Image 1 (cartoon, rainbow, N blue to C red):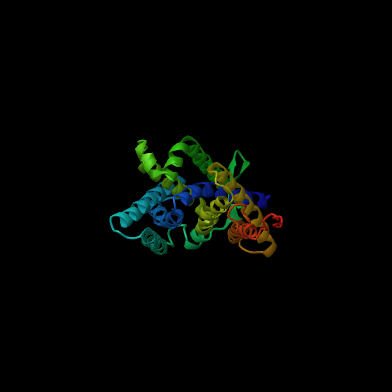
Image 2: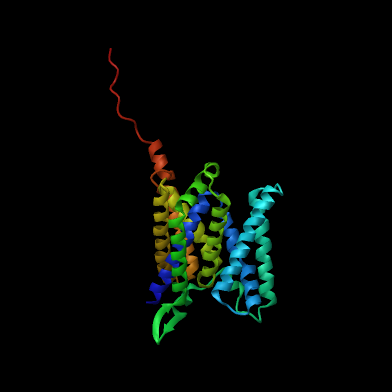
Length: 298
């Protein structure tokens, strides 16, 4: 039963992170997800220091604010500061993440947050953190939190799909239609921040970043249809969680690390064998013998 809860947790994180990561990937902002996933750390700590307890809403609010601040910093450094986008991302997230590490180190004896938890997480402990109601075991708390996040993200995407879709593929066209591109941009970043912080405690930042980037990148190799890409992202996320857990049991190794490696394995298979973009498939097509032409006769 423990394995079921662990795989379900990994699947929820992979699905929610991957679907949001698909939008970031097509916006050429995949590293923005990495930046936000690290930069929200000081927001978590500051929120705790202000309210004095680990209420999920307070931590999420702090993470959202810092996530939006990260986006604002990156855009201003790249647009007004005339820096390249990759440099702006590197400066912003390393500064904020380092600030978070300093805050954790400073208050390590007072708050129940540590760098190992944030960076690596421990998904194996998910089945132990259960919720009871009238002496009835309702299952692990992270499942309920991640499930609620999945419903939130799915509902927002379903309702605002048109706005997200148009602003992702054709920003100028969206502006000409009068669509508020700033709203959709920051709404997406807020969802990435929420997903990141609710996943920290269970799986850690490393697995969140892996699921933000790898499953949607793998799905991108197999289809040009965006809706199919979102569906394939969820499928690859589930397979990464399932086989990653199996590999970790087999090797007696880190579960989060195994899930990340398996996700990377699917990406490698996609790079080699995807029907349209696979290296092996393209090589075979280039070597395909043309139909036999009859010999010329006088």
